[in-house]
Length: 345
Ligand code: FUB
Image (tube, rainbow, N blue to C red; front, side, top):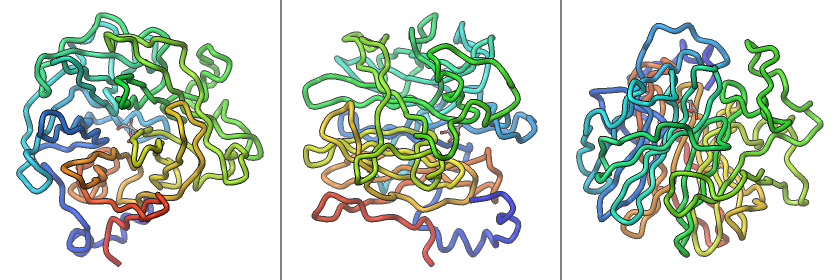
């Protein structure tokens, strides 16, 4: 939701109308990646803080330093903050901006994937390992080779393969990698190096993970998001094109790739037959929330499907102080997802 409309919001009224409440109120949390591990819900969010950085379109005000894992016995139970799971000071390669993370579980080990800016100012994706889903996590000494940009989401397929989806434009730097190497020109511009509006939009990336889940097993590949005619979505199609916040889930044998449209504030999805895509645009999962960013995950818990998302209602609209929430989603018989309005009209 644009900043200039926030000053007109009566937050008491808005919070009455919200379809769900913040899951935790002792800290600000965002970008919830939820998983159902061993009969419990574990949410891997960003931990929002006000570090005093000025707002800009590169997201410098998102100056997060650590991660806390939130756990729940079920969707209606109390959400528990399990304390610091990983701090940027313990990650040798990372300087700042611990943005949206995700996690995976394999053979009794838990893997926390996170983007952060290195000392060279470039976002890469790292991994840290723990014997517990709530950490503490021990980081690898270097970022994942060939990783770049932000917002990792790791999907475990039914055959035991794991895939990482990632990427984000503007402050997430995806547009700086169009030629395969980082383009450092015009460092203050979030939109330099983007395609023109009549050209195909930038695409997110996917890479299969190695068996040890610590590195990619292959070079990342771009994943195509198509319209119903089979054409790539265009950069000017701001209500549908990929911006950031990738997620992948499987429903009824189909792969659902979902993402945020960033500056138009929707969470959308596209459907495919392979974890590599192509994915055909399907519609919106979530209409705009209070706050600039929208980010989500989709998780099945005991036969029902839930959208974990965030808004800035608890902070009364402060963009970088967000709160994670959960709401049930429903599928239509044709596989489409019913769009959620985050506030009752
Ligand atoms: O939380 C920082 C950034 O904001 C995330 O990485 C983006 O997806 C957006 O939610």
